[in-house]
Length: 66
Length: 427
Ligand code: HEM
Ligand code: SF4
Image (cartoon, rainbow over all chains, first blue to last red; front, side):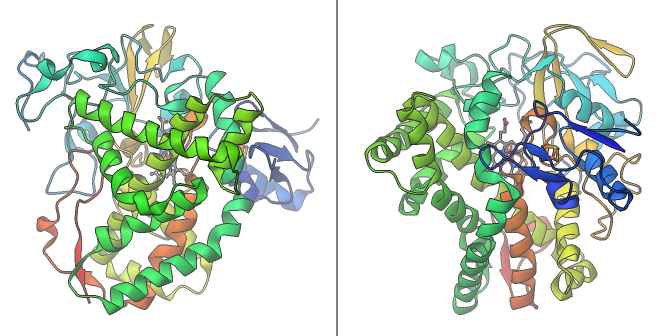
């Protein structure tokens, strides 16, 4: 799994941080997403998929293999 | 409801907006719009002002459009489908005069800060303040909110009953929270609550709306002035620092302050009132919220209540900047588009059996806070407040019940934000 995030689209909702805190964080100054781990371990994949589908800005993109 | 005299009858086949919820099903979207949604995700409606914008009903199309920069939120655009109808007391067109007459279609208000702007201007302003609402900062506020809520429940229990939950509980709590966060003295709450009420009313005249907004902006401007010389820890001080740094003008901060103050209390207050009312109608689900040991049960219940009620009803309203194809239908440049979130949130392809309130379902895909570019900036705060409030009230007052019949509850059929004017409860 290869994750990319679109900082321009991200509206700082933090839903990804709630669902997959090991993979996503938020910048302190404006709440925009920080990708902590672009290629997380398999046990994170389900949470990452959930975060991508719940993200209200559709700012999280998943590619299978880089 | 009266139709304004200047609008001709709708052509056959084109339904009218606004199209209120049915008093018989006060928790459900307008039955007519629901019925039409079954025929397709995009159709034309006739707005109260005679324009014929498009309504989009499906969850997927709404979510995509709300992130699409070919749609503009600029309410002064000629095709913009304004939600603010001009009726009440036979005034109408003749009331539009002076400054208010030049305000495009938003009837009396020229500047709503970033909620009325497109990117990149929108993003520039929004990101000056979005850092206040990160998950971590909002979590840090939870204990203080819990304490505040407990204090209000103590006073409910000590006070007379029945009591109007709106005035004694739902309105003051979010109002206090946002005032404190911004740095607006809560002592002035009557002033800002009366003026915000005018701004979200669908029946206020343009002149009334204009003077309410001006009064609020002047008030915030004075507070910003104080923070410029004497900063504290609050959001206005944070923004005043940007004024000193030359990043924002004092007026930009005052107008943004009004937006946050407004956005922060009417919405959450109505969600508290209607959420409690809906739980009282569903006692077994209320008991689950009350007895939950796992906080996730409450988190899930809040999402389902947000979905089911969708209090920011009447649609996210936009104008097409280019021709756009939606579900096989071409929306022409300049035409209005209305995304009805209350229908996205009852889309059966996303929420099976959507008209059933089920606090155990996964409702997180709901669009009660909008989606995309203008997705509610205050949602982590609103969610946290609701997660504290519902279980606290149900636990401390387990015999809480309506003091009237449901059909006597005065629902806000006439407001941009749905809710109830009063809710008399006892125990
Ligand atoms: C349950 C409570 C709430 C609901 C249902 C709600 C709903 C919404 C919705 C639907 C939007 C999208 C508007 C659009 O797309 O045109 C929005 C935007 C907004 N909300 Fe909320 N809101 C709530 C609480 C709050 C709170 C607590 C605050 C302030 C602290 C707030 C401040 C805002 C602001 C400033 C925007 C504009 C965002 C932008 O344009 O980028 N809201 N809200
Ligand atoms: S959920 Fe989406 S919008 Fe929200 S912070 Fe994460 S990436 Fe950004």
